Each structure stands twice: as C-alpha cells, then as structure tokens.
Length: 204
Image 1 (cartoon, rainbow, N blue to C red):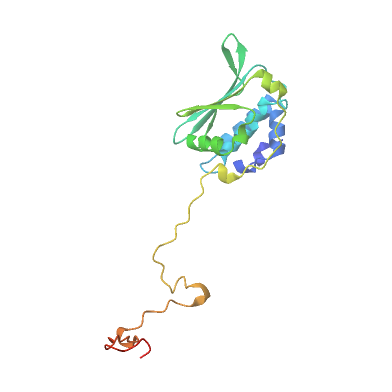
Image 2: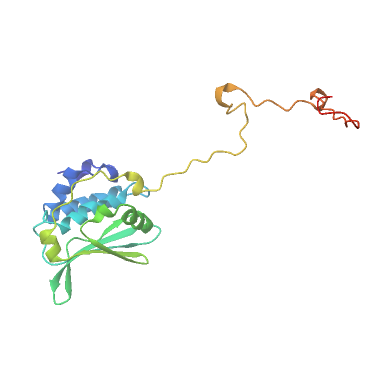
C-alpha cells in the first residue's frame, strides 16, 4: 500500500493498519510517512493504534516482549520500538520516529482513548510513556475490532468565546424583539397608600 496518499494523520484507516502490520518494512514505511505529515493538534497519536496491533496475533514476525517508548517535549515526540532478545538485551525493530507534535498530545491520547493501545500495558513517568506486552500475551491476543477513533480525543479543539456585552442590534433577542427600556419615572403609575381612620373596616 502506498502511504504517500496519506496527507493527514486522521486519514489512517483499517486497511492501512492491516497492511502495516504485515511486515517490518510496511510498518517502517507508515512511521516514516507519519514523521512527514504529523502536525500539532492533527491526530498524530492514532499511530499508536497501528503499533499496538503488533502486540496481537495479527503480527507473526516479532519474537519476545514488545516495548514501545514514547518520549518528548513541547516541540516533538520520539517513538522507539524494540523487542527483547534475551539476557536483558533489546533489539530495535525500526529507526526511531520523530514527530513534530508535543509529547502532551500522546499522553492525552492514551488517557482519553485507552482502546487505542490494547493489549499493551501502559506506564508513564514524566515525559516518558512505556507501552509493553509480553510474548505470551502477543501470541494469545486477537486483534481488537477496528473502531473509529474520535479525533476530538486525540487533539485540542479551539473553544468558542462569546462576548459578555453583546449589543442588541447585533444579536437581537429571540423573535427579533428588543428588551423594553424601563418607563420614565414620570410615566410610571403611582401607588398611593392611605392610612385607615379609626373605625373603618377593610372594605371601607
């Protein structure tokens, strides 16, 4: 599949992910494309859905524990993917991927859309998120059903601010009627209170 057709991260679809998981070359190509098109507040954390699929039976070319490290700062995020090869050694599956997206977007995406990373477990320490899955779980976890990730859970949407003092001629009241101004004091009805004389009843 030609990932060059992807112009935005949110255009990632099930077919792209299935193809990416089929081989290391395909996944590396997808990561490389994301590094080219990723931008702040444009849904870049959805790439974790593709990486999480490596931790299921959909992927048969990985051995050992899968480990995905997501780190970064206010300007960029780095994704490093590796597997254990025994005796405490690890082997990188792909070159590190650097996205021009703040780390906070990925932290927020993992928190708001936990299904994005199933079956991986998550641990965050400061500016580092570590996603892992053991070899046993990888060999027994079926790929989760593909779901449409709500882009609003992966990005910051601008809030609309409405001015407090809105002129009535700009935003009239419902029905087009303007609020009636208070009547001048001279035109207001006068209420006169008279004290009852001794012996007068209520009806007098």
